[in-house]
Image 1 (cartoon, one colour):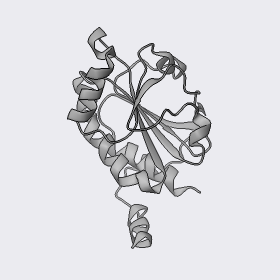
Image 2 (image 1 turned 135 degrees about the vertical axis):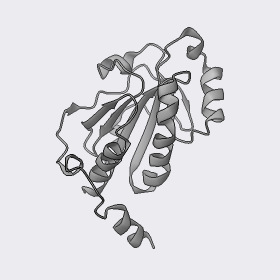
Image 3 (image 1 turned 90 degrees about the vertical axis):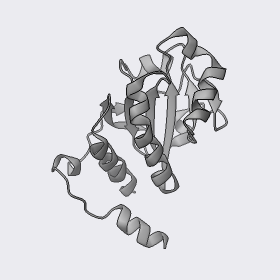
Image 4 (image 1 turned 180 degrees about the vertical axis):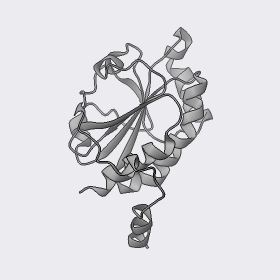
Length: 171
């Protein structure tokens, strides 16, 4: 059964052509810094812990409508690809002071039924390490710890999923 699923998982799909282009190596993924209050997992303290996995980092905040509009896609990718080597990390970077409170973030994670790991970046240290400026922001990291794809804001869900599939397919 698993083999059939993988066959379907990586079968050709209708694309625009850009989705099949090889993903460039953009830069080494920054080390995890400034993260606290991990939810749904013990603390992940280093990118080295995730070598061998494809990682999707989602910078979000719970009162951002754009983040909430993108969240269903991130949740689907986690559910669909987790068993194939995708690790989704929600990095909560607050836009407003009330979003810094752990109990508010925990309440939002429960409300939205987020099952993937979430950590708070209240000091924006990881945010700055990625030179990020947007909510939501997606960074896709390959099995060797290199950033291979970025997307800011809503949309491009099919292209993002295609990039996930491409990195998972590579061994």
